Image (cartoon, rainbow, N blue to C red):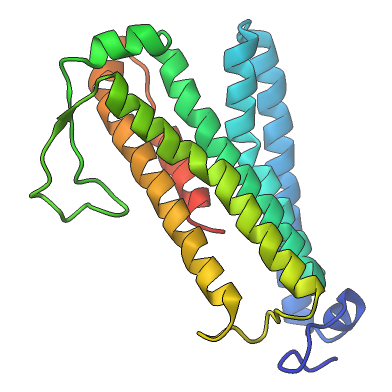
Length: 240
């Protein structure tokens, strides 16, 4: 097997160097990824039968498809180590789109943008939420008006554009031989690009959490359960 400390191995070398235990674990992960795809297909059929609104159905499928897409991308990046950069690009871009889709799905569940703002105009947004400001209890509350909604919407949507661009730049540097997955230090431009990607992801998750937590004040009265699905999306959003 090729020494991974010197260069990233090819898929054939990687698989050949696996022990029987590691090979079994790899097959187990593959089965789990395929099971996630099967569950998604089942949910796709269910939503197609139960939801007539195309707008809501498409956004639900976008959120639910995050799990098989990220799972398969991670599996490919594991089996084919040299494709890890492309798998990271796919996961990052799709996670951003799923967060944005869930944001608009929340708005749709609350009757649309206009009705949601009318229902939330008397609700104060709590800003000390994770993952950035969960311990900052000194932060003031702010009313959920159109201006605040626009700011939170932009914070969530920026990751849809910024993360793929930054990942694409890293991929270009990798293709040009300026970036090696085995060596990233403070002298590498990728180090700072990764910091920007982390900040972008955290900012998006923060705005996402504020909106979901504020919406739950109204959603509970309409028997709309958003917290569980929101938590599952966040778990994948923190991964790439």
